[in-house]
Image (tube, rainbow, N blue to C red; front, side, top):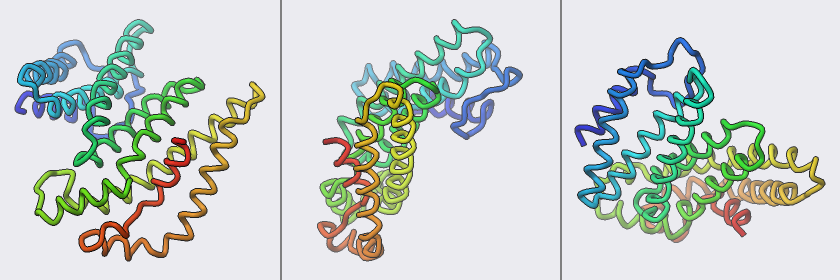
Length: 251
């Protein structure tokens, strides 16, 4: 863990904590500074994989992906730009694959990762395929908001779980649900515009279905406080509006 923490701290010191890509050429890191960030993270991935610790290897891949997603926009030439962007997709893909298959108990991390992954796809602007993949990242979070996830989290809460993702789980997931909903609607709006030239209406239908699901969730919003209060005592009565929206799109 020391190597991973070292790499993350160096990244934050040199590039800041925000996930926003670096766009100014003047802020591009020199090769030595870049190695000081990348090498500890890559070494930690190798160690965790050798130990069979998939969770920590995925976490390290995620942190490395965040680095590449920040710097790919400020490279000196197209070759380096493509290499950094490809590395970002590779690391995000590895982390996403693990947390998708090990979602239970890691829901907040998986949803945040998925939003960041969707953001990377969205940054490759003007491409329909990228927008579609960003939308898929968001839809993949559906099960993280399910009643099964809520009940499992409530059980861990009752057992006084100390896992980082379980701290204020319900509040975090409600806030993340709003973020996913906003991202989905924006992506669908983009895709509706893109498919107009093709004469299609697939995304227009999906956008309409998403709006209907959102309207239905607004009507049930009055019970949100009751659901939050019931999280510990009656999780079966809890629900998250974004789940119905995502399930509708998932088909």
